Image (cartoon, rainbow, N blue to C red):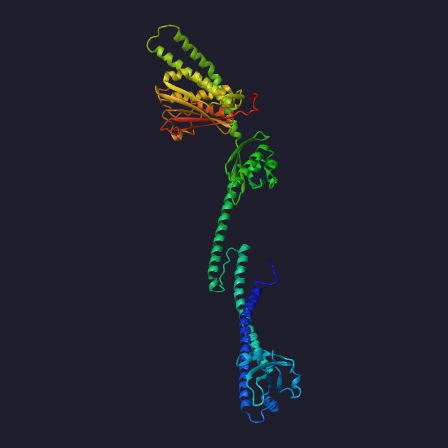
Length: 608
């Protein structure tokens, strides 16, 4: 804020004000003290003269009557330059050097005069006041006396002009004021010079600070106004060095970020806290050519994707609430390109915004379709020769013929492996249909316990053969989930079959528990088998992945069951995960999946 006075002028004025007040106080005190001392001394002098006058009148010769008194005090008053008055005890003036004897009677009664009253109580009284009779300020001193000869007892009073004393005091005051003014002037000049020297040094510091603020990061303060400023100068120069180093680091990091963004094959869109586009990189400009023109606009305006706009708003809202979780969505453009978009909120001072990364997965989608089509085609092509092999092997085994050597055992192996390949082809075809979305799925509210019981019946023979107990525990209220019954049975069947196979033979136990958590039904399938090593937990849902490829004594599996479960649950807006060991136990494995509860309004069948 700019004011009428500079800092230097305000500082000088402040020092002058302090100096003036510092000198004014002692000057006023000493002036008052001198005036008081002079007045006191004047009063004392008058008192001494009064005592001398009283003694003189008491020892003087003559008639010693009122005429004698009048003539004597007039003579003494003229020589001593004072006024002498003699007042009777009743206050009547009997003689006054300023008035003739025949006019004394015209004077007013003096009984109430302060000095007269005090003289009657004490040896002497004194006062200083203005006299209308003589037209000036006088010092009065009065003394009680027993009279002089035929002069009756009364009060002898003298009055001396105070103007001389006042003039003396005024002259002393004038000299004091002159000394004060001279001292103030000299001190003010010295203060101005000192402040000028100091402010010149500060002005140099300010100039260096302004140069640094305008980009001169190599500027440093070299002149120190005084020792008191040395720590400030040292701190300022250190701060300037750190700023220079930080600016260099930020510039380098910015260049690196620019290089990284420009070199990325993924498209990047940076949003501010208001959800507006701040910048893009060349890869995004290739994906959406109009994106650079929409800087300052919303992602919807740049990409015309409502789903992306909704995801951005959710991420920004979560970031403002302190929830910095990542969000992923998949988009399909008009040009049949597929993008997987990752949205990450950026923490900062308050909340900085979000970064949106576009990964072009069109080729991955194409290869996935090629793979699914290949699997489906190969499965169909293998079905016919496999059926023939299996049929001929079963026909020969059921013909009743006697085979020599190991022929029958060879036929048993052929039939067993044909059955295994047949199951694998079924799983492959089912997985291919689920992944491609061609599998028919009818979503309707249902009791998950019914699907569990159906799967349990289908595996009763396998469980009895291996001596494994299967138990289920579902909530008494039996909440309904929105699911396809056959596919939910498939999920239970695959998980139960897995658990039965890996539970210890003869003493195995599989427990299925369900509970409601929020708006989901969570089902846990626990076994008391050997468990799964941590490095395998994230991969058991991959197709054909098996933890114990060389294990014996367990029924062979296709390695596709858990992959099918994952895809079915994904299509149901659910999820699945594996945990080992089972919480609260030393071993075993838990497969836990969740399904959304059916809403009251979801009473109609949804077909996909």
